[in-house]
Image 1 (cartoon, rainbow, N blue to C red):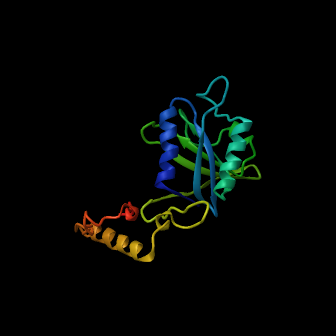
Image 2 (cartoon, rainbow, N blue to C red):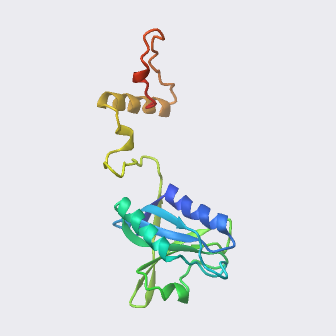
Length: 192
């Protein structure tokens, strides 16, 4: 089974809708069957982009750099089938990929994302679980630390968590008011 967040799933779906009736696609990276990075690539096919998705050698280099930068493993290429079902074509199978990710736009307004495992010439469908972005912590790719904690101490983070809990409970959080006469611009924070 593959796991993907709503945000990443929506990137793929938006691209497929925006490029319709042409095929669209890109690269996927992640770890342990969890898709953590989506890199959309423009269709580079020279002739009929409604029937084929293609990318250039430079796109492979871009994808490689994207995966290295974000410390992700290559998971596969995704692409759309604007007029067809999301089942691998003979051309898709000829690329010898372990996983194929295909967006079917047979019903343009209800696209479907499917994952396929290809082993020994056999094609088997893999489940895809779309998970909410709620509660996902964004990490700084350089430090590995949560982005929220940059420059914030534990007291500030605890206060922010308390204010978020108040908002969830339907209460208006109370912000500390600074005396305008003694306000120090160097203490300004956009954390809240």
